[in-house]
Amino acid sequence: MAISVRNEGAKVNSNINVTPMVDVMLVLLIIFMVITPMLQKGQSVDLAKTNNPMQMPDADKEDAVIVAVMRDGKVFLDTEIVTPDQLTQKVKDRVSSRQNKEVFVKADARAHYKAVVEVVDDVRSAGVDQLGLLTDQRRDSNKQQP
Image (cartoon, rainbow, N blue to C red; front, top):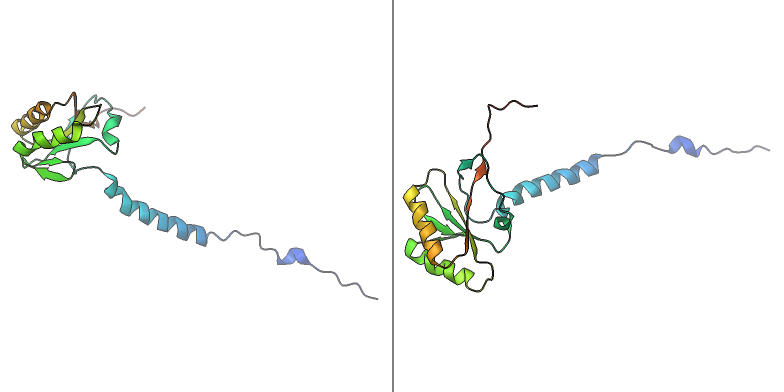
């Protein structure tokens, strides 16, 4: 009588197939690359650089009122272009129902100073309590890395 021995261990493949995981990761990477530029609120502006900017986390909130001054003098309220005489009324309409009357102004680094001051005056005349000027952190290339 013969005993048949089954060799199950010889059939086991201990290698991990990473191809499906790589496919999923590449799809996620493409999705994030497409979605990320759409997450920015308002108009894209080349902000002025400062040494010690104060953090303003309220500017990233969904309901933040952001006024952008472009280098050619155009003024945007979030994504809508407005004229200087419309700006005061539109800001007043947006902040009238809020308890926290806060508006953020982001101006292009090469925008005329006069245009930025006029926007700040228009926003202030709308009854805004707090006005934040958005800037970027200056990166000093002369600093030595530790």
